[in-house]
Length: 469
Image (cartoon, rainbow, N blue to C red; front, top):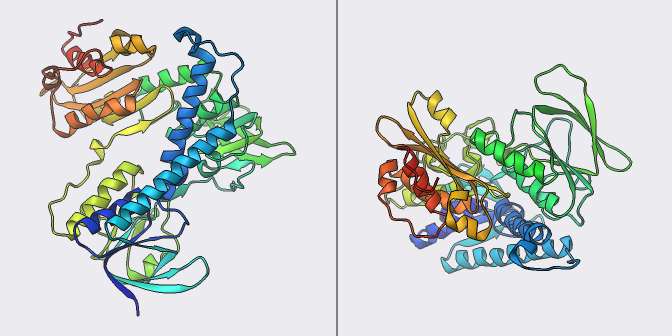
């Protein structure tokens, strides 16, 4: 006899565990089914959280190597341990694992370890690690199975020479030469980390610039900063093949545009960071009528699949494949099931964040996208060097850019490059979501001295009147 729940959630990543917590809070009998031994999904165990811990380690290393003397700190021959840095990252993950488990328990959401597959439209068969099978029945089922690193045809990750982000977050040692395929957030963040620890890093990007989804000026600034740190960046270059050698790997490269002469790039290891693919295989979706498109579950505005009582959230529901989108959707689905008002997510209101140094964060349309959409725009860009707090803390690289509708003044988008960009962006997320104008931002008093004054100055600059430049 199958256990009966109001809602069963497949996956305990940011979307899944948040859905479980909210279900318990709203009085629904819920269960989260997770195939991995630890809760939290890729984000908590191999992605968002451990990488941010490693990035903090890298920031400390970079400070000691490059900036300590500027602050009057004399450090002679510091011992910098990659192993201890990874151990610290692991402790952070374990603490968060315990936190997620505790929250689910607190809100009376059951947890079952095992691999779930649809037995029928209302029942899941769950196979435990020891092979034992149980059945879970639910009035509603939420698919929150996340995603995995996408690989090029003919390239298979082995965790030794050919890596995914899951391997890169826990390497035993820093490679002497690391090649990174892809310059999105994952590739750039790992490039920053391993460069700080002394690896010779080469980043290969098939498009014409790094961080290709971000503002072009932001891409250029980050590239300049990376190259100044000794990172070799090859844009407009595609990888035709990856071969293992006696000592490492050899990549065959050629121009994306065609022509040219192929070249060979050698490294000790290669990290494949070219995007992610949804985990929808082996769930038995076809048998119960859940339709997919390019591997993603097809959903409506309520995140309902083609089967009315089956929902999908997070990466499996389509891009943008971001943890904070998944969390929002987890709450949205459960509140919908509980009959409460919901807040459907609009992709243009979801911030993008890259946590390397300098940090990059954005919301809404870039200047180029706004013009392509037919808007007449006003653009203001204010540098952090004009902000007292930036000068005081020695972090003056970067700027805030605001793109506004020239006719109505509404903020269409914004990009921040520089110190704490991933924190500062949320003032502009609020502005974009609330359809505020730049003039309304001007009317807000910003504390002095703070980094957020750069946003105020950029808003002033929309009408050509910034104060400190």
